Length: 317
Image (cartoon, rainbow, N blue to C red; front, side):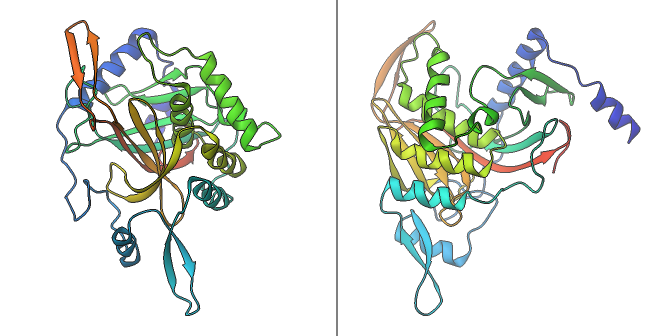
């Protein structure tokens, strides 16, 4: 145990060169084959949690569902009628804190997720049949991130500019205020050269990252759910599936080129993951030449597997 403490105590702050090396190793790992999950009778590959019989019924009726009680005391599955209804139901469900330990200064949020890796760089398409599992630790103040450098040693680097859980928790916490803060953070962070992703999509993607990677207060999470229907281009998608195969209901932003989904559990409205695909065929130029990306190409597919508050990076809840 002393050796472990010594190791964690000496965890270095990552240098630019070490950060680049760590990211390069991570990208290489993402390209390596990984066992695909067993296929079940669902539209896409599935995850570690099998659905109960009641959720199998949910698949049959089409996805976006909620549980209500009928006169006989049984649970009846009903569809989510609109994105506004999804936002309100998710906000009400977010009233409870999902973490066993209340986040406090000095704590870290452990996050485990699985992703579909890129099929082949620099192509944007991800491989539906492969999975890579990632673990990372984010300080609860949103300022630092820790990950494995590929050699079993944690490296810590400063998080890039953007909005944090603390920023969003500043009173008053309302859908309008959290949306305004995220919009301002997006505006202050220029998109990469050649990236024509609209601001609305960047805002939805930022909300998704915050939900996945930061320890949000329940009222902040509720405000974010209520803010999503306020964003132009966001609708409800009834038959979403995350990278682990869990069936869900999604907030879906559809722009000129892409659709991006934030997928929630259809019962508890917890965050499950994301999916994105192109909605139109387009060409783009790279140093290697001109390339075409066809409509319907998957460009991101993730599943949020586990999260919990820990004392320091390297620990797991």
